[in-house]
Length: 122
Image (cartoon, rainbow, N blue to C red):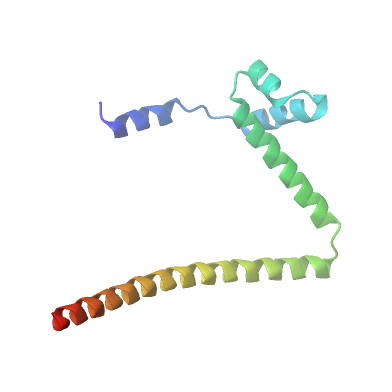
């Protein structure tokens, strides 16, 4: 059995949960204030999985509350700033790659020049 087949078999064994099931599990943690690990054990799921669901829920709630407090102009400004932020991150990644490429080429040129100088001196 090859490695890829094992991975494929593991992927097939992965459980799939409906959105309603996830919401109910999160509700049990939030409303009862019980530990995530305890609720996960009771439901027969991984505590890591339930923890991720709870964190996602809390993050979505914070974003919804923050968006509700903003005026129309503030929301428009926020969207514009988020767009600019995405563009700047993309440009920054490009410049990092370009600098790495230029650095590699520059290093190769310096190494070649030193080698030629040493060969000429000998």
